Amino acid sequence: MDLKDARALVTGGGSGIGLATARAIIEGGGQAVICGRREDVLHAAAADIGATAIVADVAKEEDVEHLVVGSIAALGGLNVLINNAAYGYHAKLLDVDTAKFRAVFETNVVGAMMVGRACAQHFADNGGGTILNVGSTSAQRGYAGGTPYSATKFALRSMTECWRAELRPLGIRVMEIDPSEVQTPFGGRDMSTLNPTKLEAGEIAHMIKAMLEMDDRGFVTTATVWATNPQG
Image (cartoon, rainbow, N blue to C red; front, side):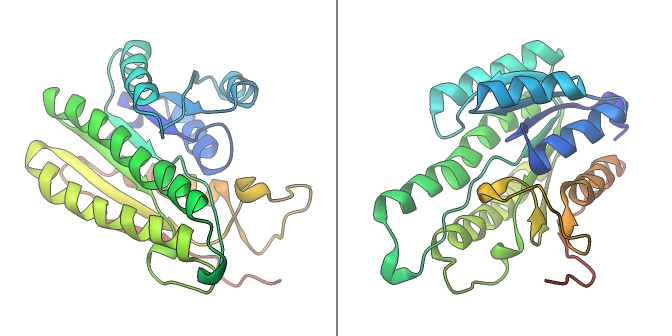
């Protein structure tokens, strides 16, 4: 697609990969709505990049309905979803807190499904669109301490494949990007010092932009992005 035609909803767009992606879409001539739970952070980010801000928690169905209807109204339609909202909870099996385990699934899996469902309905009713789920290399291989977070990303990858099978006949592209470790505020990372050999949000936004820009007759199923030679 030509990014000038993009009318995108970017969940988790107040910082990190979501913000960098929304910026890339807008710099390419498109429009974007960003959503998040932190009103002050979200509105400051939107003002910085020229996006529309809608405060929403994707784990709440009423918020998702408001978000998608509001995005369609703000942009005069919607043809791209960047399904990015997520957070990390890590613990070894013997230490997993059941309430926290359920909570991370509510955002990372149930929330992604609800936003995807609402956007897919709009896309199906309006000639097509693109859903791009932001996964993780944690969706490809488990690791010690990864039970809660990795499980959500494996689930997202499975949903991506199911949606692709269902939505492809409707002219809806369903793609996934699996970044390796990216230096963002995700998980409370200290952003005052960055390791120059590790990934930053801009690299992931660059790849997402390229995936979107492929002509609509083609799509990338899954793209995995690793740092070339991360040190430290």
